[in-house]
Length: 304
Image (cartoon, rainbow, N blue to C red):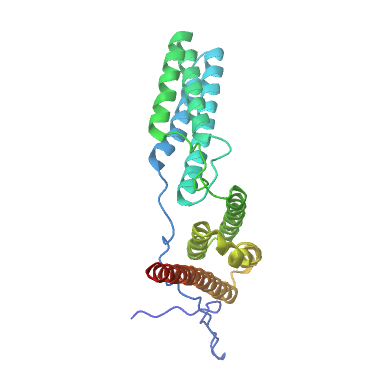
């Protein structure tokens, strides 16, 4: 007959003759781990960009010194192109997600395409020592890269016909808040707990809903200023301290307290976003009512 293990060092274990020991259970997550996450675009193609240059490293050592050096240089430039392209895709995804955004300062995908063309050209030149063939193949590789991944955003979004100073201030504030969220996600990885990482990702999705609301209506920035600044920074600092503490002791009580803290934080951010939406509806109702009264007065004046 099966018997549950309850050793001396088990959470519910006890030795013979000892009093029953208390148990500590961590809070169970009620949200799916994939909430707020999206698959990365071009994921398979980006992986190939990193894998293919590594294959040339093994064949490079079978060639003469000059060809080997050229092939290794080409592989290094190809890896640089893959890294630039991956960062460019991430920057474009962040750009597309926001209502108001400035174009990336560095066109990483374009630079990645150029680096890919140079890398392929070096590989061709190292094997044949034909400059024309290397240039033709490099140009073809650059064009194929641009066709596969596209260009970087080359213009700002949501900044046409509006107060440039106000929109720049909002875009800068959102970028700072996104950086704090990224730091929070990096800190929780030190705890080595996938459920905690998923819970932090859920909170990041809730916070981004507030970001989108502020971008929709810049007047909400006044209400959300503390949430985008002080509260987010406090959440990041608390996450850093928790990750360091939990990684050392794996204390279930500390974990439960941190989950409760995230629940309160998530709830408050969601409530504030709802309040801002309600205020926007109230302002809309007031504006339409005032306009309706003015039109009625104007019609009565004309009829009189």
